[in-house]
Image (cartoon, rainbow, N blue to C red; front, side):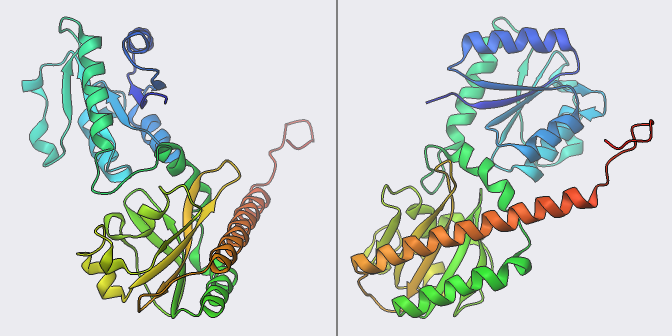
Length: 311
């Protein structure tokens, strides 16, 4: 398994490269991504998954503590470490309220080793959530970005999938949802009007870590993982069947689910049907993504190359 993904922010290119080299030597196959400013780091955070941000305090467009605040807003589970020669007592920490960061002094003996130890600990601690994470969670979250589509534009197409699932499996409720970093967000629901729920309350967050592409729970109250789950009780969910929505790269981004209000079994044919519908739903999401990209390309006219041509 590869090491953590680290975004390293330092405006001094030589200092940045020196520290990156030392981290590569000290760490367990880390993926290191460099940035020179607060805005560049924030852009990287929006574009890709990361386990940790390591930043100098003095940046050309702000401070490391300001970046830590942005990290908390954009990727709440990503740790932020201020790695600087600036005296910790002189940092304006009072201005940033409850923003919590680690601090490693650059001028300390074996500073790079100390930095790696903190990075390794915080990245490991990130995985110690109240619910299980897939081994490819970082890649899985990155794969979600293209499917952050307008639910209203999707509703007619994916809504038909949930209608068909509910009718064929004879269940009162069905949904298509995306499993995001901290929540399950519903793209379409049949028989319910659900808003996003916390990931630790979601059956689907457990379903996507199973080897079987279709997870079945005949009675959630008999499953120790959900016996005390008040959210499922409020939603009226007693039985569950969920099929993975999986990309061509094998990354599960969401689920197609059928829910019963009473305990029940799901046959092999039921599971196969649900898995087939999940593949159809994934194809619909892919098509909507490609259409959105096409519309964006058409909205951006080619630039004039100055010689009467377009580029």
